[in-house]
Image (cartoon, rainbow, N blue to C red; front, side, top):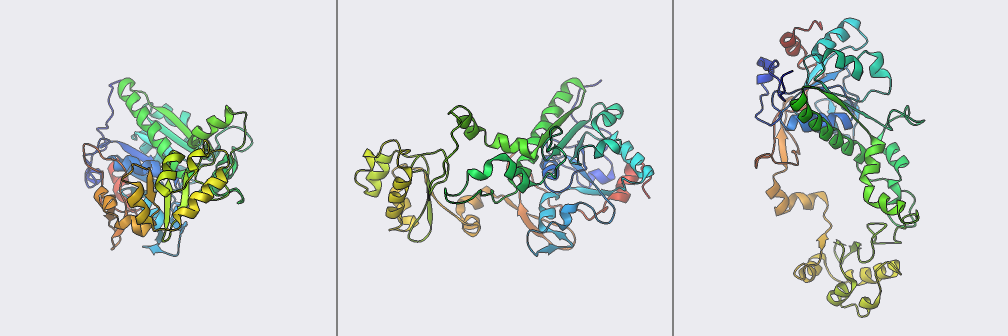
Length: 399
């Protein structure tokens, strides 16, 4: 089999309308996933130039269309859906219809990548499990994401971000000692799973370029959260399994000594990273801090003492003292302050995407390829918006 990375049989009128010069141009990705993790992996591939066709149920589409983070509705869909599904096409397929399912398998034979997050066992019952599609397309890269993996008593439980955080131990690393478990205020498991899945897909595409054979990459929300904690878990596993102890206040990492933490100033908040206590004591005019040991013993008292001093002046006043001295410190910004920051504007990380009669401001890819940040003005599709064109292009009978 000829060894190559790119496709040569999908560049027709529909594809050319979204042509890209990105490094994954001419690759065809079928995004059969819903919600966040799988679709975010597909989005990353689209940002790199891949053509992504989102396979959705007729009428209702991806359940994420109705997953509202606020009461903001944009052209009938949630802001979340628009953010995670920009730059994709939508093909409506009724997977309960045997004829349409057969037509979808014909499209699978032409694809380079499939991404799916069906509950364990469902995709196999549809005849679209890995072994099924491998038989018709040996070069296919097949990517799956689940909540808790395919084995063990949690395998069939709902795979949702908050539930994965709850089972991962990560909730005991944030907040103060007198708080209960505190979740991370982002869908962090979903986003991490999307990044891990995209990385695995790219690795298999490189291998396919060498061997002609595809492969399967799998991850789960729980696995990525365990990996996310690898630094602290390794400490725990090799330190007598002593549980992490969060600071009573001002702390930012259960395992790091004073002065590491977040402190209130006269007009805001200031973050201090790893810094010798003697140096901080000198700069903050805190006599005796240098004799306070390694920062672990009596950590709460040390953090309180530093906090009391920092509260006496404004954030900018302290930055004027600490930054010239080479101290690792930063003002704690909210979103508005971040958006107004000159350094953020220099990154050029926001983009306007169009469609459906309005422009939507969202984020752009966090990477640059050959000095350029991947960008596309195409917004998220309506359910089945491209069905007719895709069916005509690939000769599918989906009417």
